[in-house]
Picture (cartoon, rainbow, N blue to C red):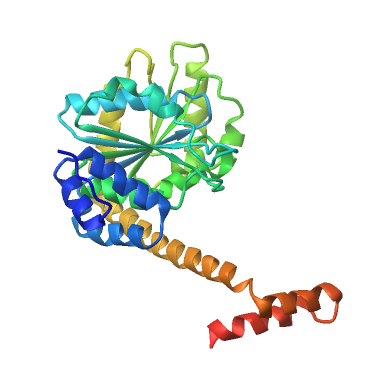
Length: 320
């Protein structure tokens, strides 16, 4: 029977036992933020580290959602439990996610070992909401062997996914355009595996040559992982087994070399910094109101006072 509570402790216990409704409520608490979200983080943290996080990213229209669905099917055939975060563009009117990715993954809707959640970008520049890290942790803590994060294609700032994932798959299409521009976008730097999707189209060989040429300009250490380039046709499943095998090979390499530990430590460090920055930002917004703020703002607007000294006065109370 579904649990009827909003208490994070009870919800977490139920979600860890496989209650999908409880997991959905926990993820809603995470997205909402505040004290409940902090409590979810406290509960989940001791149970993390077993799930493997894969980022799937690339330009809009590359077929990421269809490819993600095919990857889910392959992982399930291998007996894995899979959690998916589909990062959707926020609606400009409601702030909610469009949910297009979940529509494309309906083949897995009735599989109890697959959990798919759309999360809205909520205007965040990089296409990833600040709740994404916590949602990843929660899926890991509730027993998902793999956590797949599929991102919005938003150009240069899409490299942010690399900071959230253990392995990153960059999806491109044949005739993908100027490889130099892709390099500027940072996709070449973050990729552990390249998937040339829609490989039944013309231009596959040229795209592979472009990628290989760009990689040859990069200096790799002798024992460092060099990105794999392979082809897929997500609509038919062609190449998907090879794609998952390539991710598994990268995982083995990262575990052996210590790179996986390094990435996860960096992720936790950056998350800590991000939380501090966000809380300071919220504190600053609270500070920029009230009688003292109104008086200083009026002085600055009239030219009676410079903005720097006014800011110093407002900050004096919290910097003491």
